[in-house]
Image (cartoon, rainbow, N blue to C red; front, top):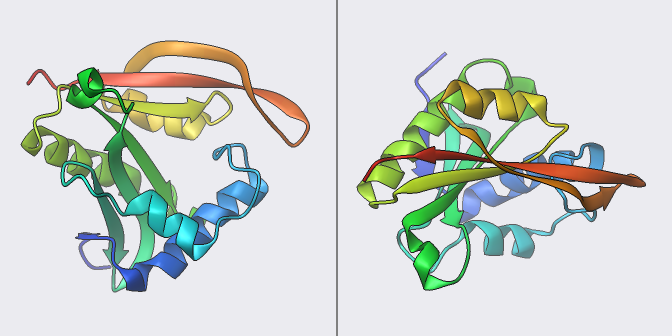
Length: 166
């Protein structure tokens, strides 16, 4: 097993990233998309015009194991001090510490980009993601009841936040 490499998402990563994401769309409440995403939709989600917002493929032995993003939390200018973190891993590689390494990596990027706080929006059923973020110092900032519907069930979300003290 080689070291994980975090590299900016490029065109050659999009197919595998789309397949990872679409697994969660089709089979879980991790994503609130209800329709599979196309390559163009994935490209739009991970390519950012603002250089503060970044997307990285997580590679090991040249295999895409997942991806991590820091994106705009909200579009109004006063929110510019807050970034939103998203991590998706190929299910075959969950539980190997990759999520923790990805979170540490993206937090360092956030500090470099001078973000004051980071948030993660998670379906309340996604206890593994909540556990990952909690383990790394994120705390619950908000809880919204029945804001989504998928698989004929109303779903809650939790917003976790970490202050970077910048």
